Image (cartoon, rainbow, N blue to C red; front, side, top):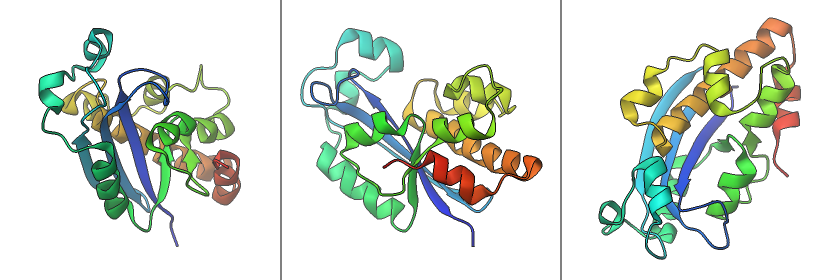
Length: 181
C-alpha cells in the first residue's frame, strides 16, 4: 500500500514562530504516484504585515482582513489532511509555525539529501530544476505563495520516490531518514 502524504507550505510575516505570524497555508495531497487534491487558505495574522514580507509574497493587510484565524485554518487543514502523513520542505520551520508535532512527518529536504546527495543544493527551487519539475506548476499559481510551493514540494517528493526506484533504494529506508522526530 502506498503512503498518503499531506504536503504543506506556509507564508509568514517573518522567520520566528514566537514573534511572527502565519499568513497562508496550503496543502497538496499525494496518494500513490499522483496529486490527489489541493487546499489553501489565507490566515489573519496577529498584527500588521511588515512591508518586507508583503514584498516577498504579495500578501497585504487587505487580503487577510476577513481571513480565518490560525486556529480555524488549522482545524480545516486537519480535516482535509486526515489519514495522511504530513510532509514539508524544511519541515521543522513549517511544522513549528503551525504547532504541528506530527509523529513520522516527512522533511522533503532530508529526503532529497538522502536520495540525491549530488544535487547542487537541496533548496526547493534548486530541486525543481534538478528533477526537471515543470516550472509552470508554481508560476501558474503565483510565485512565493504557499500553494505553488506546496505543489513543487509534492513533485519533489514524487521525484524522490522515482529516484529510489532507479537507484534501488528501499522507499521505506529513504522515508526513515526523512522523518521528523
